[in-house]
Image (cartoon, rainbow, N blue to C red; front, side, top):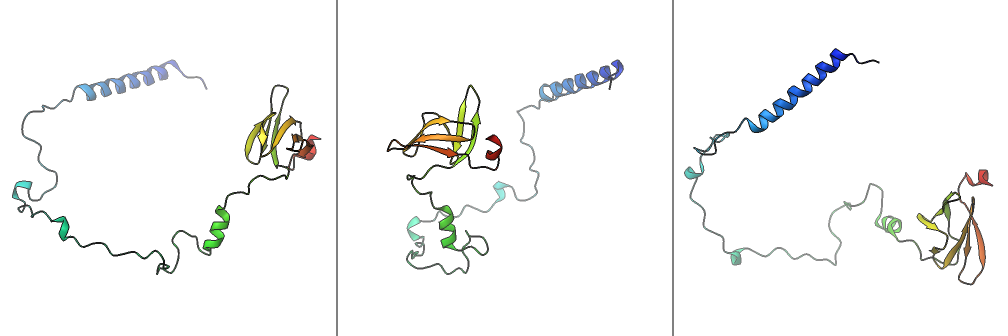
Length: 169
């Protein structure tokens, strides 16, 4: 679509008018700061006609809040922090932290392999050659596997755990 020159002139003219209007509205509409304050928008009694201020309350006369017993179960029927059908034990099991790393092989989710860079996503974190995963050290990153050296000095080849891994071999 070709823009005609007259359409371009119209658009530029409108933009110039909009800019001038904004400058005029910012600098041109100044109201004097002296003089009586503007009338309130809402009708009602003015602050001068309001009732006299009540005496201040002595803090020592305020009753103490009721004692909360933390050893008993609350009386509500449903826990407001759980969805329908959930139980507290299921929620705690979902939120529990993963077990500390052991001698099992780590799970390799993804590998970025190029001549300049070799990276692997292992258990949700990004690693490169020389990094440590638990007590193992990454020795090499191949196209479809990661070679690790365990604390005992044994070398293991951990395969990529994805459906695409079979196409890379």
